[in-house]
Length: 73
Image (cartoon, rainbow, N blue to C red; front, top):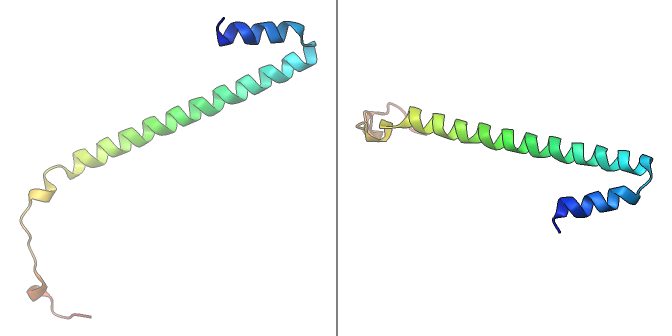
């Protein structure tokens, strides 16, 4: 028996008010999952964007050295 089938069996014996509470909770879980998925996707795109923008910058020659500084602290 799948989890969904087990949930349906439990729901069948609950009064309507408790079924509404279960529905509210399921909607809450779905909303939280969707937000986490969206956040994860946004983070992936941000990482990709940053990596793409920074690509080959590390290969640039160093333009300045400590000797080029006029003042040191």
